[in-house]
Length: 113
Image (cartoon, rainbow, N blue to C red; front, side):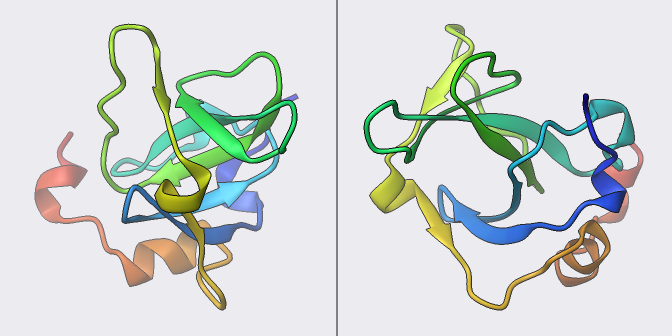
């Protein structure tokens, strides 16, 4: 089952130094507003830390992230990440997509895509 991104609660994170929202569910791509991008995160078997991000993760699914900028996923289909440097939880950050969009508004150019 996949969930509507607009009805979920999130934890704001910094992913590769950029603002993003994290949720531990599988989210429905059809419900993502224009100007946001949906990816899924894989965890490491031993540490349970995030280690890989892709358009879809089948095994070891940690959750989903919404970003303001499109990630450059290599031809192999995934992007490795280092939990200690590429993934930072943000205290008292945005908890909803609406809050996130208000804090990091979509520019007019992005709306036209």
